[in-house]
Image 1 (cartoon, rainbow, N blue to C red):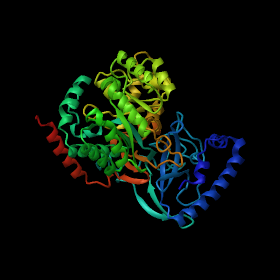
Image 2 (cartoon, helix red, strand yellow):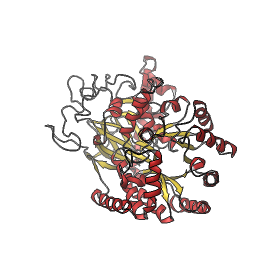
Image 3 (cartoon, helix red, strand yellow):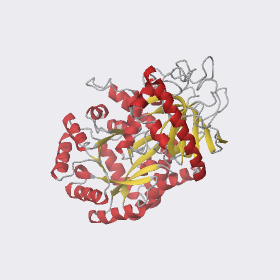
Length: 553
């Protein structure tokens, strides 16, 4: 159920902006708005109780939103109803809060300082900013229970505590204690060959040609459907464990219908939100028939899984196959994601010309590894409604080209980050954000210094969601969106005493900080542990698969 108060609480209108600024001229308007929202919220809570709506409140964390730009809201609550964000604001567990998105009586901080009156008083997030004014408790200060994933450090392990409670009207509320946590939207990986989880670091020092030879021509043909299932399940769970709640699975191991069914089944079992990128691996003349089967059998209903066409495209598979791929996408009304622009300037130019000449140069197209487009070509792609997926570590490591992160943003392109493959790249978004940040600011032309940590977080969340076609569903904390959230610990030596929560997420956090993860309001990781799978069994299946596919045949 989408609450009317949700639409009002986080609206983009002038009144909301005035409330966020805290201007004296808007004080009376904000007060009246709060009264109205409070009445609506209480009424809707009564209706929620009658309808049996599930209510969860993430309470007491430092909340970071990403839309329209990353901003620190301060110590506020996030209220979830039936898997969607209902409100963001103070005291949402007991029915007295309104959820106007302005933080606790203060500014939306988004700038260089995060400690404000009403958020904590002092400046350090890991020091006293999250304690009460006048000597409260620090996030990551006194609660220093765990360093990394183990105990120790002289303190008590905190974890995430959950308890049932009742609001003022008697509604059942599950409260997730986010004290000592940074709460933010889940990360979005816009291009990942998930099936390769079982061949991690198999070619760490290779080139792009070497990758194609070893992975695509030698190892991929050895994959059985059970190997695809093992890799996809382990890879999707790896994502969830690292705070990646949305994944575009660019799956080019579809040699038979059984391979495809195994890949999709694993994604569904994992509990991740996934966009399945179907890349046909059989005879070209079977592409349309099999693509329609996959769509009708696996994606006929709404849920956590959706489908796009992962096209080999004109630069890899040639014009005839590319025409079949785009034709199928249009017949099924699906977006296209394709490796375009990563094979040298000439190939990039010829590929764009092919799309234009055949009426295929248009919206809902993701250009993966778009490294060799000129600035004018990037602007043309932006004008067509396209977007890009940047794999900064992979593109540099394989010699594909210098990442275009800043150039793409300057061209007006929706820009996202992607792992690509753990065969020669790390599998977490923290590594990618740091790489994108460092590579952009270190551009040889000196034009990247305007790129900051907020840009890095934005392309890892809301921009990624837009690229995979889910910008209205995930990627930010806008009420009405799906509650895909990550809670990061700050009580470790690597995260304590951070002055800027966004800077800490981008530059200091790693997978050991990921304490709790929710997808559509469902907790899939808590206290640093995945909840719904026997990880030992998952790893055993992955190890068996790895032995099978890497055996010389």
